[in-house]
Structures are given as structure tokens and as C-alpha cells.
Length: 220
Image (cartoon, rainbow, N blue to C red; front, side, top):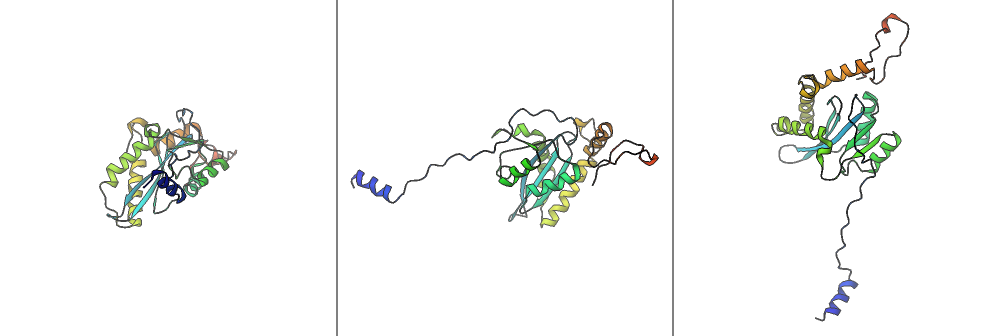
């Protein structure tokens, strides 16, 4: 067949394969991140996946406070709305100054971008292919997978949630971290909040004797 005729038929039938363009990246902050010196200064987020047996997948949203290494959220579900979960965390811990995550579609969605704008939270996106820039949550995910996900078989979503809750309690309240001076994350948070007086929803200070102690209590 004549190659010119072949090309004409090819173009008339629109058989050409469209060139795939790179995915648009969210316009988050990419400036160097300062060290988190107090609770609530920076949260790090990531999603982790696993399965029920060898079949249906489920996902877990992990949210950590980078200052005290505390896991604020380890939620499992088959479908997770990041914005809704962040609203729940803000009601408990207060609004973070900044959040760091990768460029996954879950964190570049319109809902997340709108949430960050409405709440005036600086959302920092790490460079593509450089998970070490979000090292705190990557280290947490490694421990989670090595100690729980690779060791347990989850029968149902409720079973997964129960086992995750037990592991999370141990991580936050029982296990000391060398980076925290051999304190647990929960102990480190309490010590910092007592020193800084930075807990969310603090009790109003009055002249009454029962409110003389100037420490703030975390709303749980």
C-alpha cells in the first residue's frame, strides 16, 4: 500500500496514540522545612496499603507530629477522605502550622487544596522520588509494616482497626524513643506542653486556686 494513502487513512480515522503528558503537580511550598521545635508545628502525612488475606485492599492514613514523633492518626478504611480526617484532628490537637506530604493524588486533590487554603495551613510537598525529605513518616511506616502489617493477617476491617489501635497505643505510650531522650512520644508531648504551655483548648486562667497551675490540658 502507498505510504501516503496509509498515512491519510490513519489520520482520518484518528488512530494516532495521544502523547501522554506529565501529571500536573500541586502548587505547594517547596522551601526548606524548618525543624519542628514544639507540638503542632509540623505534621507529616502518608497513606499505607494492605489487604484482607489475599483479596480486598484497604488503606491507612498515618498522621504524625514531627516534633514529638507522636502518631496522631492511624485510620483504616476502604475509602478515606483526607480533608474530613484532618478536620477531626484539628478539633483534638489544634491546627498545625504546616503539613508535609508527597505528591500523591490523595494530597493534590481539590478537596485537600481547598482545606489547606481555608485553614491557612502551609502544605509542603516533597520533591518527586525523594521520600527521605519526609523521613519521619517514612520511618514510622517502616516500623508499622515490619512490626504489624508483615506479621498479621487481617480478617475484616474491624479486625484491622483493632490491631492497629493496639499497635498505635504501644508506639505512643509504651515504647521509648532514643531521639526523644528515651521518652515515649506521649511523654515528650506532655513535657513540651507543660514547658511551652502550647496545648490546644487550654483552660482559661483565673484567680481561683483550682486554676493556679498554668499547664494546659489536651482535649481528647
